[in-house]
Amino acid sequence: MTQHDAHDQPRNPGRRIFLRAAAATAAVTSGVLATGATAGAAAAAAATPAAAPALAAAPGGFPDYRYLKTLLTPSQLKYNPTGEIIFPCVRGVYDKLANPLGRYYLYYGPHDAPGGICLAYGDSLEGPFTEYTANPIVSNNWQPHYKVSHVASPHVLWNEDVRELWLYFHGENGTTRLARSKDGITFTYDKVVLTTAMMPAGSSETSYARVFRHDLPSRDARYVMLFMLNNQSNHRDIAWGWSKDGRDWTFDQQPLVRHSDVGANNIGGPHLLSRNGSTYVVYNTSKENGGNLLITEVGNDFSRRDHLGLFYDSANSAPDNGRSASPSFGTDRGVPYMIYEAGERLQGSIAVARG
Image (spheres, rainbow, N blue to C red):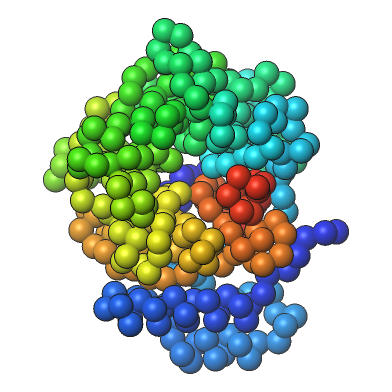
């Protein structure tokens, strides 16, 4: 698995084509470069019989992910303090840990107080996933390091340099922390890696961070962090930083992707992907702006800002209910998957789509 790399409802091909075209049109209208399906390709896709299983690839040549099933629902979990869960992160551990509970570890958790970083495990990215019996594995009270209202948004990186799983998580919303583990279950606290004080004056949130192994030779960096940035305008953008070791960071003081660049009020849940020799950021919009996943090509050196439009359209039916967010990607025996937050914010579940 790479990180760059019965009751189920079928996706709606016509809706996807319509939304992708709408996203491209909106971008062109606002003066933003947008690349999507050509009119001919869209017409051909629209003419495809309903029984045909395939659609044109997503922008950037990525698979056309389709909802497969729901993996985790709050009401079915033993640890369920708030009735909601968010921000999945899946990692293949079968080739990294000596005696893992399953081939894959799925990290997630509630957001609202007290939150908590949780773990589920399974042998396939299609599930089923079993809830770890002693959740949360990281709580909002970790003395002497911190005591906060909540901890949330786990992102786990396999750090090959030290052969550890590194957990980045937030609590409060303005602070991102790092903890480290040899087994993916028991973590040792490391340090604070990001706060609002490291960003421009007036920043109010620096959260939902994901970290990826990505070389930036010109910056003497080997890791990239993507996160959500909010300020007094209360419009959320995607920001970024870079690091040589994953612990000490430099942050760009300008957003990587601005909400206004893509015609949205708020964007968040960013994930870095690489394909065909280039690098992309996938992120979600708020439900009021469609609740979909969009994609921007930033290039291997992060110098590009090509907004390519729709990456994944949320279905109106359950579990999406008009909103998909915070994607995490993996490959299981050659098949690509996307595990994501499905449903209205703080009312959803964790679902999987297959490419």
